[in-house]
Image (cartoon, rainbow, N blue to C red; front, side, top):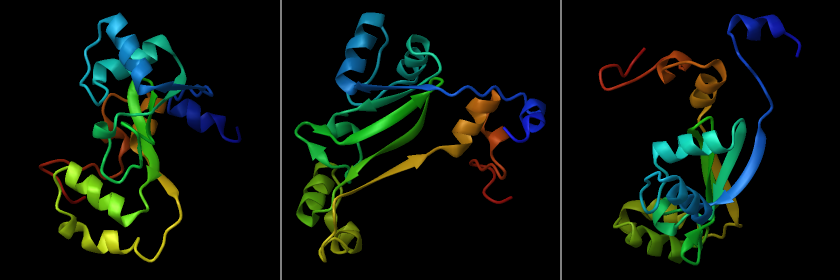
Length: 169
């Protein structure tokens, strides 16, 4: 609002997006109807793009993911997890959920992911002193910047881009 000329120089088109909440099961049904293929426990790139087509200018929070589709530290909820992904403009921009704070459950989930709990001993031990229920999320700021500015490649939105060939500025 204060410096519109800067946004204009970047050709940024900023509209406040709508927000929609939809379960993973609902997304699967929609994609089946739309004939968009996706893996059993994740969204395909085509599914993310289809969500944008169906719900333009909307941040779509996909909730109630299958437990197998989320990392070991996301809290289970029956066969599902208490995790989410946020999709905007056909791309995941955020992922998060309630974290497991019970050491024994962490060990169980690590084993379910074919990981050795001994390799995570210090992480698990940090919860043995008592931890309240909590949640976390990660936001892809470079992805958001790329989408806001209509850039073709995420490297254009990163101050010091890295890839297999370049690890230092």
